[in-house]
Length: 259
DNA sequence: ATGTCGAATAGGATTCGA
Image (cartoon, rainbow, N blue to C red; front, side, top):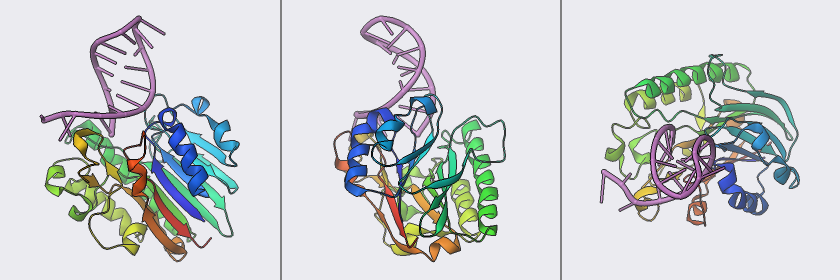
């Protein structure tokens, strides 16, 4: 089962790249973030015609997550539990029925800038709720994946210029600690289970020629429960996507599971 | 320093979010 997480930065602006990518790479499951569309504005027929089931959790203008799957989906839920007043569409879950059933969570974690401030408070509160959901997934003792744009640079080696991010919400110690707290519950960070080296990024800003200078950061992550980690065949970042015409500022991160 | 992009509003330049 090949699963890719991809922050597409707007479905309308990315239709061409996204459909080409699905044709070429044929993920079984694509977890999309920042669809920037409401559910009824999402061009689901385009993907259904390509053989994908489509589940969205959108909102107007900003945020929004979706699951595209060639495999059957069961028990789809929308929204991260823990705050009924949270209007932001950042979380969607489904069980993917492969040769093994895999619970898949697609997430778009709040950016949190400027920090300190209310947006940073929201980020940290959201990460507390993430930790609660993560505990429940572990308790089920089943293969589960939490993948998406975490908006966290886990360590200095995950940024080309770590000092430039020192006071940014993506790298502040409280952000890193909250990310580590989730990992330390017992999750495996798939990319780091396969690759130790620095210099691997999943995001390059549109500004200041960041891509041409390889001034990137690694903020898109795939976390696996122990039962999912046992199925891990490989994890890689598809950096070539950033060099295409009309790219997103993020690229896909893949896991291949024996499921 | 951002050197940018996407969406909404409004009816083409501006604002917000990233």
